Image (cartoon, rainbow, N blue to C red):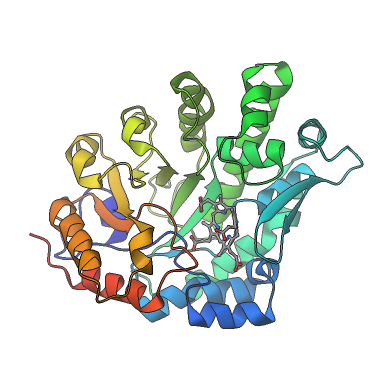
Length: 356
Ligand code: CP3
């Protein structure tokens, strides 16, 4: 059903649902595992990654699983060191003796031999986990693979940490030097190889997360988001069905980005809180693109009985559910502060909703 909606042809009476960050700290079962294992272990030991990926499917009967991993692991194949602190905040470091500065990390990444072998060495647990999940998942529920989009990965290389303003990245990339252009292409290649390995292992659709692209001006967004996206989409492998693997793209500030994104060849727009999917569902449908989103994740922190939760959720479902290209999701990931019972309530409400 989820894949039908991605093909703009959901004929069932139900709305497909999955949630960004559907596996995570708001789940008591995840929190328990997290007391025993580090985040790296949960991601990079295939049996554990498989177990965590399946938790939300088992607990909430969601319509798609997303492989439990992180957008930053592939950066290891550019000779960078990726660390998650005790509180899970990520940081990226140079490890080849170059200074751990923006320039030093960029030089490490530019010099790295980032061939497919190197990526396989660093990320094979991700692909192994995908094979394990595919064996366990009911055949009508797709497994989604994912990667960071080029701009967002560039910001982690150039800033070394999460950085909404990404000033060093905007300066480096705006210089338009040969080095900056080369680094962009290298990150694109990395993303394509990482996604293709996930598709080979059994992912049936992939999502690109561009969480930090909202501060780009329109020329920069075209150069570092939409143009790379077109190139990435055209290089992805086909599924066993013979169709090219569908790509869903997430960015913040979708309200002022979506029209260009509809022309990139992607099959799904993941709307953040700036744009109700119902507003563009028909326009997207005409371009064979699905729309996904966009309940405000903050609402998941209210108790499940709260009337505002029900009102806002019902409002979204009434507007968006008639569209055959609509997939329920949030405007961003499930926050760690979310109330587990509220998330379950939302999942159940969406599952039981009858489309008009
Ligand atoms: O969606 C899923 O359930 C799949 C797993 C997934 C994670 N990260 C697990 C994770 C996905 C798709 C991501 C993507 C990701 N990672 C993004 C893009 C989406 C977004 O949220 O904007 C970004 C920017 C990252 C980088 C990252 N990883 C950050 C900024 C953090 C710390 C802040 C936070 O939200 O916790 C992480 C850690 C991380 N990645 C956790 C999880 C479940 C928390 C780990 C823990 O403590 O158990």
